[in-house]
Image 1 (spheres, rainbow, N blue to C red):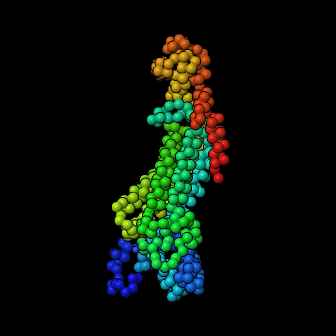
Image 2: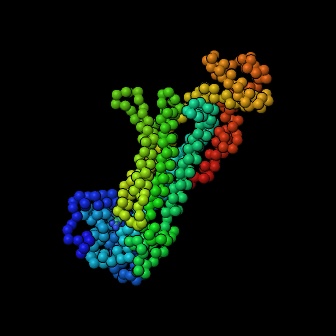
Image 3: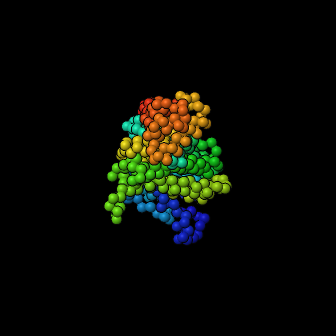
Length: 455
Ligand code: ARG
């Protein structure tokens, strides 16, 4: 491949470790798009003739159609997608193919292809996330006033609404959406034309190629542009945070769908059976979603480790960037689609949710608040009195609303019949009207806001 300089070909093992065609063929479309833009620019600037550029651009379309049809013969000896495409172009159009690589290097070529590939994935995430958010908003709307236990330490804390809990995840995924958008905006500078590392003496037009390829501008520093992989790290970091959110929701679905909780029923479409235990409905999709962060964060750590301490500019280490990102992107897109389907299909169990919300003394805080606002106790004393009442109920094996007024008044004489109004879970959630609180009316207005925000 390297013409005059070498007498011997590579060792077979050298070829195996050196080649990236096994995976970078996934960037064929970006490679060809980039080369077509480059050829058009070479003609516009008079660096190659219009005739040669036209032959190159047409030939590249033929190569693309062969790759898409699956008839293209990839060669490991040709190392990577860039050389494979160019070699085939030479077979197809002959000598003019040799002019395509003028004022260009594989270093800026790979930086370009990979950046465009990652940009497509950021776009795909920006496309997929609103669908997941919409599924959560639908769930929130249907159960805006359904009551469930809210937890801290996975111990019953206070009643909340199902809708509020669903919208908590909508917030998280919306931040993820913002992170992918931000990453995309930052990565949208074109490295093409930086050549090997130093720029070129040919009178190229980098504005023209940048524009043709949908970039906001050409990257300003050639050394940075060929060696930058921030865009991939930023994508992986956004993907890791998103996968972490997916894992938290997935974990809740695993817990909630258990026989001990029965908060939700996952549809058959998102469950599996057991080969031995006929009663089983396993939440496999949720478990896999819980696990995906392992791969995605793994890719993130791997790429950070590859890039750490690399001197400027290109080093072959950087060929190790792609497989990690490909796998992480595939995992993320599959995970987002699976979570969207599972959330859309799942059936929250209103009665089980409400029964759980009503147990575990979940309205103890409401009782303490009542003692403050209706009986004028300092909060610390109210907390103590309420604690004593919880202990009493626990000893009797009942819940707070089951205590008699006399029992209440034993704990504090200022307690009146009115206290029973705040011990019910519906009153409890309805009272949480502070901005961002769990009250059903808040949930309904947030649902309305989401409907306006979502595309
Ligand atoms: N296959 C290489 C990669 O993925 C392309 C760039 C090679 N450049 C070079 N000078 N060897 O990074």
